[in-house]
Amino acid sequence: MSGAPTDPAGDGATGRSIWTRPRRGTRGPTPTHGRDEIAAAAVELADAGGLDAVSMRAVAGALDMAAGSLYRHLSSRDDLLDLMVDRCVGELRPYPADDDGTWTDQFLRLARRQLALHGRHPWLADALARRADPGPNTLAHFDACLRILQPVRATTAAKFEAIAMVTGVVTLFARNAAATGTVTFDHVDMAAYPHLAAAFAAPAPNPPPGDDLFTRTLRALLAGLLTSDGPDQGRP
Image (cartoon, rainbow, N blue to C red; front, side, top):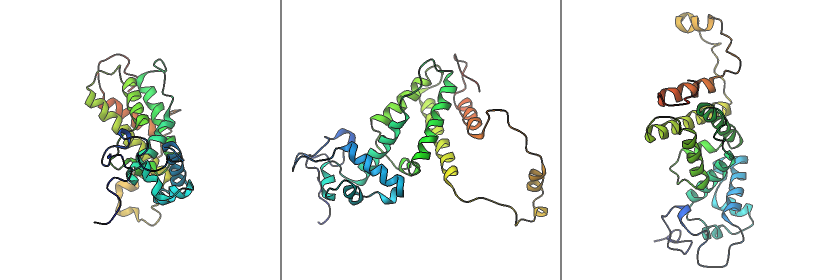
């Protein structure tokens, strides 16, 4: 049967998470580049050309090494993507201090940092859409979120649902911000759509100072998912 070796790293670890395997295989010479350098090179390629620009061969070329040498560290491109995601999530550190406002305010600030992270790495949403094994930075992010949510009297399942939903909203806003197309209605005969016409004819209200759709959405989401009579719920 042809194809890639069934155990390219030589450590019997094929099929295991990248995070539970040794940092290098046991066969061959000592690699000249570590996982951190590999992840950094891959992130740089993705930032410049998207995920399609990231391949084992391209990353190896960026590091002036043979493509086969990457298999001293990785079993597949999925391993590479796991390293890239975790490296980027590490940019969210440090996390808010315990006394840095209400839990709602802390969570909103962290969500805004997530949004900025996606702005720096537009490919991240696609990388997160696949099944991934969480690395140490990703686990630290979940840990920080649960610490922020400690005052909330809700089940652990509800808290994880809230974390996932906030991440989903962040991803949605990040994708919208990256979109280049604009929807226009200049070509539409509004007489055929009376409710749409009335909506456009109504004057747009001025939002309160400091208010925006991202903040309103997340405040409503958190209040709806984590409603409780516990202490320090923050503003709804």
